[in-house]
Amino acid sequence: KPKAIIIGAGIAGIASAIRLAIKGYQVDVFEANSKAGGKLGEIKTNGFRFDAGPSLFTMPQYVDELFKLAGKDPEDYFKYIKLKEICRYFYEDGLRLNATADLDKFARDIEEKTHSTAAEVQRYLKKSETIYDVTHRVFLERSLHKLKSYLHWDTLKSIFRFGQIDAFRTQAMANQAFFKDGRITQLFNRYATYNGSDPYQAPATLNVIPHFEYHFGAFIPKDGMYGIVSALVKLAEELAIRFHYSQKVEEILYTDAGKPKTKGVKVNDKIYKADIVISNLDIWFTYKNLLKGIAEPKKLLTQERSSSALIFYWGMDSNYSELGLHNIFFTEDYQKEFNAIWKDKTVSSDPTVYINISSKHIRTDAPAHAENWFVMINVPANTGQNWDQLIKEAKVNIIKKISRILNRNIEKDIICEQILDPRTIESKTGSYQGALYGNSSNNQFSAFLRHSNFSSKVKNLYFCGGSVHPGGGIPLALLSAKIIDDDIRLVV
Ligand code: FAD
Image (tube, rainbow, N blue to C red; front, top):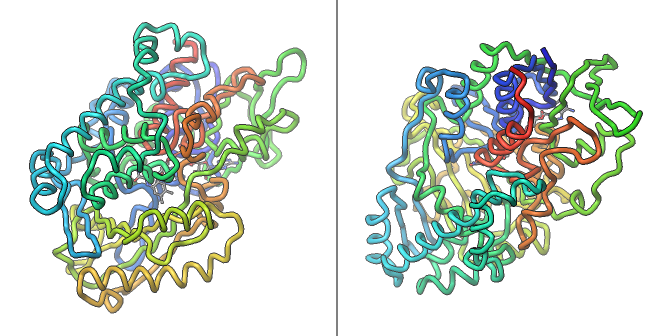
């Protein structure tokens, strides 16, 4: 059998491994950590279980597809439910909105409680659908770096409709024009943060993101987000894929006669041979640490990184009936918050706070009468800020904000705490500067300034994951594995 080596057992690395095993390769996955998952990790402490990274699950069909490709029934491995309530929104002025999967209900709620109308919401979501229709085949599902992608009729049709993707004004500008009520503009501006960007700089094309959530739906895996990893690793092991944990790859090896071609990798000074190598690492570290002697694509690697996150994992000794699975507590001044992150590279004193409580659905994630709070704010990527000080200040501001809005002292309920910040995101998952989603999407050309899924310098070397095309987040990371799969010759 031909051999493939995957570096990193992040979600895209596991998906690539499964796809190659199905193609007939003998696949070995080398992972620096002692467990699979990368950013999609989990924390267990004091009777609480937390998903460490992603908490919102969209496009589950991309996970199901992997089981189907292997000839299995996804239901036998991986169960999830569609959420009826997507997110609860809390504003400082007392406004509370409930984004339900029933869009008419959500739009009516907005009309009843704000100056915006249900028709505005419907027009906005229609626009979101149009942007999806025009962009998904070109920007998400195919390589942007192969001529053959542009020779598809549907790609050409999309290119003729590019005027509709709203690339020449910012998302915040577009949304302000859509909604009479600033609080609804704010609600939809938040989608820029789904790929770590700034709505006041990013193109309005990012208004495609709500389509994923409101049209395809938001989901929760029955075993939590880490359940995605466990189910895929189980499938991978059944396909005879070998996982080598706590094995950090030191170098990608290639032939030097003629056009370089991958030969394998070096781990702990030992050489492992392979016909194909796929790196699931952050592309920045792939070039800096593993690809010795290959010129770096400087322009791509020096793009601005996406934002990072500061997360408090709090075991809460109480139940909060006002809260749901996903909750947002908005800042009073969104532009000021984004200026703090992007211009001053610091943490806002009034940050928008996201609280995810998986125990609302998965009772075993917290002891009885308790809840597991994943409390996250957006912060800049790590460029050497004084994080210890910023974390201390942020904790005080977050506790004050939630207590104020819920009119209840939340601090006394915190019985255990763990913290993840940009420094530890970088050290634990190998993400340069702790960025959650690779490069930011703060300009119209971002899609073209992400690294391709293959190397133009080393034959049979591929790149998958959130730092390369088509971008960050679980669905896009899974699509990167699919694009590589489409490019690799069928072996059996
Ligand atoms: P990564 O998760 O980046 O994994 C890379 C792997 O490579 C790691 O396991 C690492 O240990 C390993 N590695 C590194 N160096 C080496 C080496 N030299 N040798 C061997 N192995 C190595 N996405 C969503 O869809 N929804 C969300 O709600 C969401 N929220 C997020 C919240 C947070 C706090 C974070 C951190 C991310 C969030 N994301 C979310 C983004 C999502 O987690 C990522 O886009 C996705 O998991 C990236 O997967 P990946 O395949 O790029 O691999």
